[in-house]
Image (cartoon, rainbow, N blue to C red; front, side, top):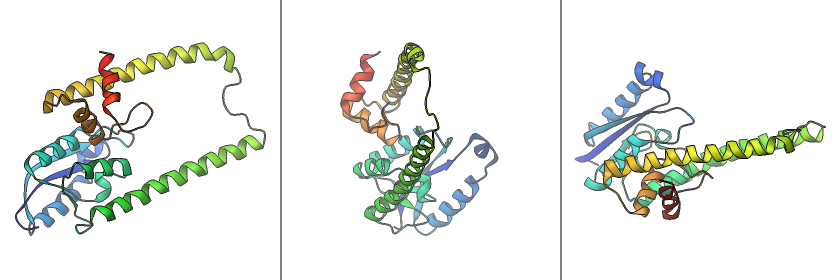
Length: 218
């Protein structure tokens, strides 16, 4: 890997960690130690996100530059890049090279397997939660709203309002991507949204049709 040009990507989980440098210093040291014998860093991106936030604009910009100039994306730990199999698949489809310092010799296939295992663990947790709720219901516990009929009209109105708000946020992100990258094709915009880790309202990967539908709300 000597003489390779890297774009370093750092991520901390909260704004407080970002301000204090907690976790970030260790990532920087790991990356710096790796680069000494393997190339040089041409640019750095630092993402400060909460655990529930899927949007990763800094990562999307880093990937776009790697794709444009042939740079390699470099992270300190694989879990700093993604624990989401869907995201890793999308990243691999861009053909951008990426290296995790804690596992620098991992092939794309190995990385895919590691992420699949992590995702399987998340599914197992979800299944255990559902089983616990089912057991609660079997014991006579009541789930849901006992006044469903009365609450339905209000719930529908709230759902419509949330849909409008959600589409407004999606539209703002798409317009930001268009402004920063110059992308205009629906397929390219869908790929950019997927690279940011953003999912549709139903939790699916973006397609040209999804982008078109959002743009129609403008």
